[in-house]
Amino acid sequence: MFSKIRRSFFAITWFCFARWNPRGTLFFWRSFLLKLFGAKIVGRVNVYPSAKIWDPKNLTMYNGSCIDNDVFIYNVAMVSIGERSVISREAKLCTATHDYNLDSFDLKTKPINIMNDVWICMDVFVAPGVNIGSFGVALARSVILNDILNYEVFLGNPAKCVRMRKKINSQL
Image (cartoon, rainbow, N blue to C red; front, side):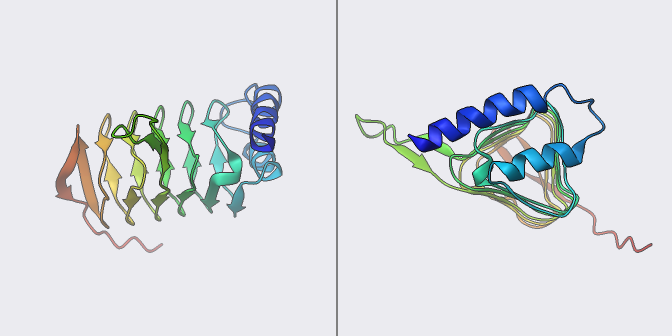
């Protein structure tokens, strides 16, 4: 019961104090609101105003990560987003499903783990229990049902590995 009240209060707070923010500014303010409701944020992150996060308590973000506008994170279980990883517009990360083999449709939850330097492109769906390795890419409109290993590029519905990302050593 307390969880529902906390999530409801967060939704109201986000609507009143974050959704109106200008798109490219006030990242620190939105990070503060997420932390206030239990998110673990390490370093500076960019969360855009129209992002929808079901439960901040089940969100971990690391330095340089980004959640773009209109992203929906349905995090009944934990979602972890690594350093410099980008979740692009309208992507959906879903950590819960139902067991359709049971008459009661019991809820099943599995965490999503996104490592460093990952790019989840526009309008991608990431299923419960998926792990995405460092430098992995899910191309636009893909449905990610299986793990993406380091440097793999996935495309399609259901998504499959279509190539390996080039390893470029970019030291400044």
